[in-house]
Image (cartoon, rainbow, N blue to C red):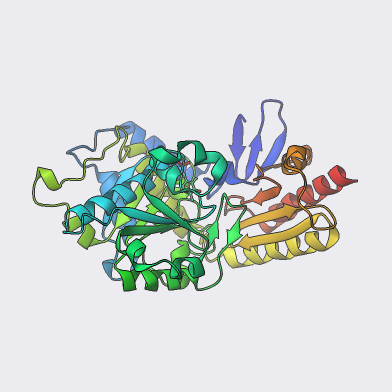
Length: 396
Ligand SMILES: *Cc1c(COP(=O)(O)O)cnc(C)c1O
């Protein structure tokens, strides 16, 4: 890929594609956006990067202020910066465990995560994940974690298990890597209540769902839930630069004060990179300037209608799962049976879609549709047409 403009990418042969998976779920306002470009250039003329270990920088301070401002009553007041989604999760988990050590609860070191979840590829984050192919061979090196299928499964845990648990982690509203599995309505709220009842912290991994992807700035806002830890990355910089943030409650921050032995020893070289923070601030400005969130409902509806129509038309579409501007189109044979994995049908159809100008990356036999939020309704139509034609072309 050599150039981008809005939702369009151009490859080295001059072919153009709609970036239907937002460059692996990162891009928000389109490529080559003037406001973000200018913000990065302006910052570049000042300084690109300075260490955040023992120092602060104005862009990071402003960004932290803007991020906590999205939450009511200053519920999440503190921000820890890192570079990517996996490290945002590592920070949350290490803080959750060290918090217990420093508040007289040192036995509470276990984590609970959900089956088929995905929280990143570093060793710790991957151990929270529930996708066997990614982690089973490393299982013994990871965090002590129990996996549950759903709320019913969580409710059936006995108290000895719960009492050793520091935190529960979940991808709120929709599990991305799990082929866009959408959680039942109110599940997040029930989970928050369960955590409160049992004195267990709630870590929300909004690395994918954050920054408007599900229709609201953050997915947790749809059920009025505030977590104890909030992990952000992918869309934070509008999809421009690697940057991550872990937001925490004031009470958690306070447990790390009072001397070197209580400190949180965690710092990456590029923590709070100034160019990344400048891009993130500009991305938040664009949300306001372009009314990104208030323009989403009509786009979500348009996508929903086109995908519904598409699923009537193609017997191979087994199901469409959609949560805001995130959608998965699952392909199966006309009898509803999954294809043999060795057929790699999802991959094959996605390759055909490229011929029709749509670029995405499937998960097994689920086609992923997650364009930049800036996509117009006309472009949604073009994208869906391309996918529909690819399905026809592959199966006929
Ligand atoms: C992508 C993703 C991660 C990992 O982020 P990286 O920046 O790739 O390390 C973690 N959690 C979720 C939900 C993700 O979608």
